Length: 424
Image (cartoon, rainbow, N blue to C red; front, side, top):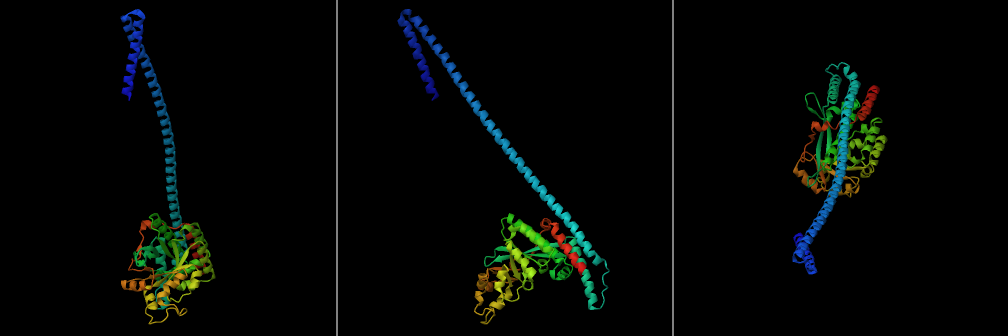
């Protein structure tokens, strides 16, 4: 397009120069004067063209420079804004990391102090010489109790407390939807102690709430870690009746859960059937306070299926764990009898549907064989737990190191334990 325009201008200039030369020649000045005039006009037109062209290019160049300057200014402003945002983000991340580090460090230090307090409260008991083992039953019992107290004391003060998780799966898909949590103590040889070995001593010394605290905080942290991995599963967390009725422990327990209501669909508090039936007015009222925050309950160690389902519903019990063998024995091996003496019109196949009408889901626990699963599916039970689906596994120590509880909970618990010890 530019070539065509340039060619047209050249021919236009030649035409104008020839016209000027012709006019001079026709005016009688001669052919030479006409040719000179034509070349002169052509030169003048060329100079004018060069001037106009240069001026236009200069204007265009100035306009482009102005655009470049505007673009550079906008880019500089954008870079400055972005740099500021990045700086604020970096400061926020650094501040958050430092706060988290300070928080964890502070909690660990306070936890160490609390352990020392706990040691002081029990050391007096342990400082007395161990009873000499005698041939009498009472002498041997006292000696064993003293040695066990020392083992429990050392396990708590030296951090030999482990968290175990066992999966709860859907049936028949066998997809993990919950975990049940357990605490285990280890003795000086790293032998894992089962709760039956140490709970009697822990209860006598008022240490069960301390163990419940540790379990609660670690379960809460595990739930959050699973949520960060997009694994939306819940955790059954055992709680003792003494913890629900402890006037010092429970307000702190409730305060923590009130500050963490987002966990109410992920933490399910579990009690044994005998413990649930033995609850008093204080424990029932405190359970209701937890339910008001949206937390749910589970009953395990079920001994009979003839339960008061209306009472369970009023108490916000949403899960009932029944041993697989007990389900099969009381629902399938009946020889035509009714599984529920209080509801004689209920058939075995209707048991799971009955519990669901009260908002309660049955979980078959202690599942050990595939044959049991066939029978359980026949009963329309939708969840199972047991070694068949996975044994309880210990959480790695580095994870537990991140889940030590805030010290104020243990402080109140140990204070309560000290008060009980003095009264005793």
